Image (cartoon, rainbow, N blue to C red; front, side, top):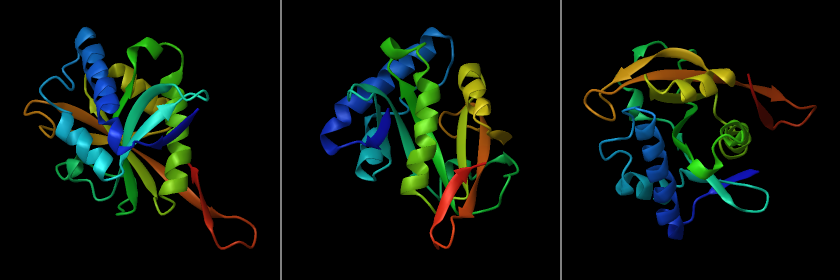
Length: 188
């Protein structure tokens, strides 16, 4: 299993996974992602800015997607709550989805594990990881908390006028290895 940046010619693939995720949420009665968000323009911007990642199996089959956004992220400008660490050195994970035909196989957990590795390699300056999900998306809340994220507050009306999302943060500790001056991030 591995994550890689989405390529320019993979817009349709990423959009297909997001649309599949929208349908899964609708089928579960969750009002997340139901009103033209995320849309094709959002995904195009993720790809153009190098934020869109594709989660593949070892045999290169596409399993899911996620966007890794480097700070600052204005999605949290109206946070009702308090961050664990007041820092500008963070990354945010948005738009996480696993193809429905791969559901129930533990791939969402594996995607999160790969996200930590990916962030350590591509964003070594990061001191924390931030993520949010709709108040009704209890499966994602469980997954986020399973990986040690702490609920720090909520945002209202950021993605859709009536959306309420819970916001989480996970601190990353930088430790020095031996006499090498490079820092290796470890998830706290």
